[in-house]
Length: 481
Image 1 (cartoon, rainbow, N blue to C red):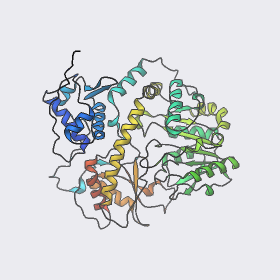
Image 2: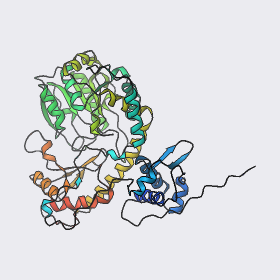
Image 3: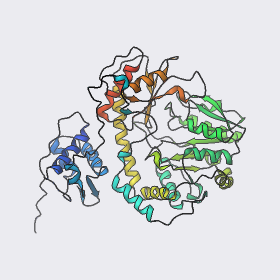
């Protein structure tokens, strides 16, 4: 029997830098491509072989290969392993990197106060660089070739995306719903407006988390509703604070925005039960329910007994892919379904058919599932690096909350601390954050900073934490970015 010689690969050397290990592995592969030792179409070593050669964990090599595929240096196909992608040699010789590189501020900067922010920690923005470019391009090419839709406000529009979402929500959030129950809209604010019209919330009270999501509050106000602030605690919104006079409740149970609390199962069941008894609509904004760390998934309010009758579920592509997509989905309570068509027509909210088609293809091809797995690993690592760096500040007057899920954490300050001034000081030191007090409906809300870590490289976590520490009262400016 003829024998096939095993593939021979050049020796890979890890660069001696302070970058995360998976990025150093990816850099080692790109360096081999740059030197011409491996070429377009050549197979890369198996993850097990390369991990043994470099003396690192196999998971680290898997993450490095994910990064190489996402950046276009490699392609992975079932049955043929991972190979060098067309054009990778040109990119490598041009010294392109497989991951975003945040340049350090010039050391000759004379006045740190004039330095523009170089680390953007504003919350609610994912890292679009984690999206697989080949899969992204394939989805958009297919969407561009699809038949054009009429472009009118119609809840039955985008059937491909609604079918794909029904399967996606069943697998990821445990929601059993049919495609005919899902309405696709251009953003969460649009979904809130449609619900306000369908539920006839004008001139009626809506129990609203405080601090809470500003755009949702503005959407309700724009439709004439009266958001009634409900202070949130460590378990999020307390169901017992909902009144019989509240026509609706707005909440973010998976990861309260912005405080970060996760509503426990007991609160979820009680909220649904009270809403059902009082005839109140619960608006469940599941804006980043796909991302959770070191904790088990909790059931969506919509999936709890009685939830179909009183819970309006709202999801979005803004946190899992990019805010640029401007896509959200709404599953209204059963009693409101007959009014939704009229509400959509009245609001005039139309989602882009090409964008909807592209997202449908990302879901159907499995690209979205692969992206979520890849992004979750990256965000978990970035969260750990940032939270660890914040712990090094050793400030007894600052606590970090909301670390179990989502894409941001909250730094809580003592009552009376001017978080707007601290945020401005941090901005002058090169770090953009959001003051917690600005999410409150009135004066006297909690003080702190809301910090998104989705786009914060692990290698810059210490610098970001140091800048924040220097911005705090009595802070010492060390290790600034």
